Length: 228
Image (cartoon, rainbow, N blue to C red):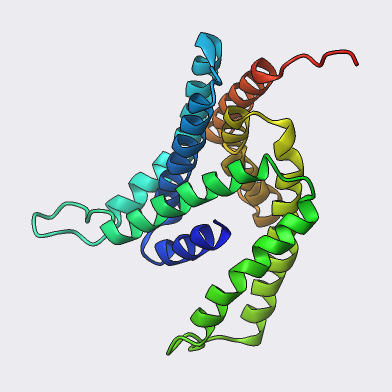
Protein backbone atom coordinates (compact mmCIF):
# COMPACT_ATOMS: atom_id res chain seq x y z
CA UNK A 1 0.00 0.00 0.00
CA UNK A 2 2.88 2.38 0.72
CA UNK A 3 4.32 1.78 -2.75
CA UNK A 4 0.87 2.02 -4.33
CA UNK A 5 0.53 5.42 -2.67
CA UNK A 6 3.99 6.93 -3.16
CA UNK A 7 4.58 5.95 -6.78
CA UNK A 8 1.28 7.19 -8.32
CA UNK A 9 1.46 10.27 -6.06
CA UNK A 10 4.90 11.19 -7.41
CA UNK A 11 3.98 10.53 -11.02
CA UNK A 12 0.66 12.37 -10.74
CA UNK A 13 2.25 15.59 -9.53
CA UNK A 14 4.33 15.77 -12.69
CA UNK A 15 1.10 16.73 -14.49
CA UNK A 16 -0.96 18.29 -11.69
CA UNK A 17 -0.78 21.54 -9.76
CA UNK A 18 -0.42 21.33 -5.99
CA UNK A 19 -3.98 22.46 -5.23
CA UNK A 20 -5.67 20.21 -7.80
CA UNK A 21 -3.61 17.25 -6.61
CA UNK A 22 -4.55 17.94 -2.98
CA UNK A 23 -8.26 18.03 -3.81
CA UNK A 24 -8.09 14.71 -5.64
CA UNK A 25 -5.90 13.06 -3.00
CA UNK A 26 -7.95 14.11 0.01
CA UNK A 27 -11.19 13.26 -1.74
CA UNK A 28 -10.00 9.71 -2.42
CA UNK A 29 -8.60 9.26 1.09
CA UNK A 30 -11.80 10.50 2.73
CA UNK A 31 -14.03 8.35 0.52
CA UNK A 32 -11.96 5.21 1.16
CA UNK A 33 -11.82 5.55 4.93
CA UNK A 34 -15.35 6.82 5.45
CA UNK A 35 -16.79 3.95 3.39
CA UNK A 36 -14.70 1.50 5.44
CA UNK A 37 -16.01 3.08 8.63
CA UNK A 38 -19.57 2.90 7.39
CA UNK A 39 -19.18 -0.79 6.50
CA UNK A 40 -17.76 -1.40 9.99
CA UNK A 41 -20.86 0.12 11.56
CA UNK A 42 -19.47 3.54 12.47
CA UNK A 43 -21.99 6.38 12.31
CA UNK A 44 -21.36 10.09 12.27
CA UNK A 45 -24.77 11.34 13.28
CA UNK A 46 -26.19 14.70 12.28
CA UNK A 47 -23.72 16.74 14.33
CA UNK A 48 -20.77 14.72 13.03
CA UNK A 49 -21.96 14.99 9.45
CA UNK A 50 -22.30 18.77 9.77
CA UNK A 51 -18.85 18.95 11.37
CA UNK A 52 -17.36 16.88 8.55
CA UNK A 53 -19.04 19.12 5.98
CA UNK A 54 -17.57 22.15 7.75
CA UNK A 55 -14.08 20.65 7.78
CA UNK A 56 -14.33 19.72 4.10
CA UNK A 57 -15.56 23.24 3.40
CA UNK A 58 -12.51 24.62 5.17
CA UNK A 59 -10.17 22.51 3.05
CA UNK A 60 -12.04 23.60 -0.08
CA UNK A 61 -11.78 27.25 0.98
CA UNK A 62 -8.05 26.77 1.44
CA UNK A 63 -7.18 24.99 -1.81
CA UNK A 64 -9.95 25.72 -4.34
CA UNK A 65 -8.70 29.23 -5.25
CA UNK A 66 -5.31 27.72 -6.06
CA UNK A 67 -6.93 24.99 -8.12
CA UNK A 68 -9.02 27.52 -10.02
CA UNK A 69 -5.97 29.67 -10.67
CA UNK A 70 -4.04 26.63 -11.88
CA UNK A 71 -6.78 25.77 -14.34
CA UNK A 72 -7.18 29.35 -15.49
CA UNK A 73 -3.46 29.60 -16.10
CA UNK A 74 -3.28 26.35 -18.06
CA UNK A 75 -2.76 26.33 -21.77
CA UNK A 76 -6.05 27.12 -23.47
CA UNK A 77 -7.75 24.50 -25.55
CA UNK A 78 -9.14 24.87 -29.02
CA UNK A 79 -12.11 26.84 -27.75
CA UNK A 80 -9.91 29.26 -25.82
CA UNK A 81 -10.94 27.95 -22.37
CA UNK A 82 -8.65 26.51 -19.73
CA UNK A 83 -7.19 23.11 -20.41
CA UNK A 84 -8.73 20.17 -18.56
CA UNK A 85 -6.89 18.39 -15.76
CA UNK A 86 -4.83 15.58 -17.34
CA UNK A 87 -6.92 12.43 -17.00
CA UNK A 88 -3.97 10.06 -16.48
CA UNK A 89 -2.49 12.25 -13.74
CA UNK A 90 -5.88 12.64 -12.05
CA UNK A 91 -6.45 8.87 -12.05
CA UNK A 92 -2.98 8.28 -10.62
CA UNK A 93 -3.71 10.68 -7.76
CA UNK A 94 -7.02 8.97 -7.04
CA UNK A 95 -5.20 5.61 -6.90
CA UNK A 96 -2.70 7.17 -4.51
CA UNK A 97 -5.51 8.40 -2.28
CA UNK A 98 -7.20 5.01 -2.12
CA UNK A 99 -3.86 3.35 -1.35
CA UNK A 100 -3.09 5.81 1.46
CA UNK A 101 -6.57 5.23 2.89
CA UNK A 102 -5.92 1.48 2.84
CA UNK A 103 -2.46 1.97 4.38
CA UNK A 104 -4.09 3.93 7.20
CA UNK A 105 -6.82 1.33 7.73
CA UNK A 106 -4.23 -1.44 8.00
CA UNK A 107 -2.37 0.64 10.59
CA UNK A 108 -5.27 0.45 13.04
CA UNK A 109 -4.40 -3.19 13.72
CA UNK A 110 -0.65 -2.71 14.07
CA UNK A 111 0.89 -3.74 17.40
CA UNK A 112 4.46 -2.51 16.80
CA UNK A 113 4.42 0.74 14.76
CA UNK A 114 8.22 0.84 14.43
CA UNK A 115 8.47 -2.66 13.00
CA UNK A 116 5.43 -2.16 10.77
CA UNK A 117 6.77 1.10 9.33
CA UNK A 118 10.23 -0.40 8.76
CA UNK A 119 8.63 -3.41 7.07
CA UNK A 120 6.51 -1.16 4.83
CA UNK A 121 9.58 0.80 3.74
CA UNK A 122 11.49 -2.44 3.19
CA UNK A 123 8.74 -3.90 1.01
CA UNK A 124 8.76 -0.73 -1.09
CA UNK A 125 12.46 -1.15 -1.95
CA UNK A 126 12.03 -3.55 -4.92
CA UNK A 127 9.81 -1.06 -6.76
CA UNK A 128 12.25 1.75 -5.90
CA UNK A 129 15.18 -0.26 -7.29
CA UNK A 130 13.32 -0.98 -10.52
CA UNK A 131 12.58 2.73 -10.93
CA UNK A 132 16.20 3.63 -10.12
CA UNK A 133 17.35 1.43 -13.02
CA UNK A 134 14.76 2.90 -15.42
CA UNK A 135 16.40 4.54 -18.47
CA UNK A 136 16.84 8.26 -17.86
CA UNK A 137 15.90 8.04 -14.19
CA UNK A 138 19.06 9.85 -13.08
CA UNK A 139 19.03 12.66 -15.64
CA UNK A 140 19.40 16.03 -13.93
CA UNK A 141 19.92 14.50 -10.49
CA UNK A 142 22.26 16.49 -8.24
CA UNK A 143 23.82 15.63 -4.86
CA UNK A 144 21.66 18.21 -3.11
CA UNK A 145 18.54 16.63 -4.58
CA UNK A 146 19.62 13.18 -3.38
CA UNK A 147 20.31 14.54 0.11
CA UNK A 148 16.91 16.25 0.25
CA UNK A 149 15.15 13.10 -0.99
CA UNK A 150 16.85 10.96 1.69
CA UNK A 151 15.94 13.51 4.36
CA UNK A 152 12.34 13.65 3.14
CA UNK A 153 11.98 9.88 2.97
CA UNK A 154 14.00 8.54 5.87
CA UNK A 155 13.42 11.32 8.39
CA UNK A 156 10.25 13.34 7.83
CA UNK A 157 8.19 10.68 6.05
CA UNK A 158 9.53 7.79 8.12
CA UNK A 159 8.89 9.55 11.42
CA UNK A 160 5.55 10.88 10.21
CA UNK A 161 4.30 7.44 9.20
CA UNK A 162 5.57 5.98 12.48
CA UNK A 163 3.69 8.56 14.54
CA UNK A 164 0.59 8.04 12.38
CA UNK A 165 0.68 4.27 12.94
CA UNK A 166 1.12 4.86 16.68
CA UNK A 167 -1.94 7.14 16.74
CA UNK A 168 -4.26 5.04 14.56
CA UNK A 169 -5.22 2.32 17.09
CA UNK A 170 -6.77 5.04 19.26
CA UNK A 171 -8.94 6.41 16.45
CA UNK A 172 -12.02 5.09 14.72
CA UNK A 173 -11.85 4.76 10.95
CA UNK A 174 -14.03 7.82 10.59
CA UNK A 175 -11.98 9.91 13.02
CA UNK A 176 -8.75 8.85 11.31
CA UNK A 177 -10.16 9.96 7.97
CA UNK A 178 -11.30 13.33 9.26
CA UNK A 179 -8.12 14.07 11.24
CA UNK A 180 -6.14 14.03 7.98
CA UNK A 181 -8.01 17.13 6.84
CA UNK A 182 -5.66 19.01 9.17
CA UNK A 183 -2.76 18.41 6.76
CA UNK A 184 -3.46 21.31 4.36
CA UNK A 185 -3.92 23.67 7.32
CA UNK A 186 -0.64 22.56 8.91
CA UNK A 187 1.09 22.97 5.55
CA UNK A 188 -0.37 26.44 5.10
CA UNK A 189 0.80 27.61 8.52
CA UNK A 190 4.17 26.00 7.81
CA UNK A 191 4.39 28.23 4.75
CA UNK A 192 3.64 31.21 7.01
CA UNK A 193 6.29 30.20 9.53
CA UNK A 194 9.08 29.12 7.19
CA UNK A 195 8.40 30.73 3.80
CA UNK A 196 7.25 34.15 4.91
CA UNK A 197 3.72 33.85 3.52
CA UNK A 198 1.04 36.07 5.05
CA UNK A 199 -1.85 34.96 7.26
CA UNK A 200 -4.91 35.93 5.25
CA UNK A 201 -8.56 36.07 6.24
CA UNK A 202 -9.19 33.08 3.98
CA UNK A 203 -6.51 31.06 5.78
CA UNK A 204 -7.87 32.01 9.19
CA UNK A 205 -11.45 31.08 8.23
CA UNK A 206 -10.35 27.82 6.64
CA UNK A 207 -8.31 26.89 9.71
CA UNK A 208 -11.25 27.65 12.01
CA UNK A 209 -13.60 25.49 9.93
CA UNK A 210 -11.18 22.57 9.70
CA UNK A 211 -10.11 22.65 13.34
CA UNK A 212 -13.67 23.01 14.57
CA UNK A 213 -14.98 20.26 12.31
CA UNK A 214 -12.17 17.83 13.09
CA UNK A 215 -12.45 18.48 16.82
CA UNK A 216 -16.20 17.94 16.80
CA UNK A 217 -15.98 14.67 14.87
CA UNK A 218 -13.13 13.26 16.97
CA UNK A 219 -14.78 14.17 20.28
CA UNK A 220 -18.09 12.80 19.07
CA UNK A 221 -16.53 9.53 17.91
CA UNK A 222 -14.58 9.00 21.15
CA UNK A 223 -16.15 6.20 23.15
CA UNK A 224 -16.06 6.35 26.97
CA UNK A 225 -13.59 3.94 28.53
CA UNK A 226 -15.05 1.29 30.79
CA UNK A 227 -13.53 0.89 34.22
CA UNK A 228 -11.53 -2.36 34.60
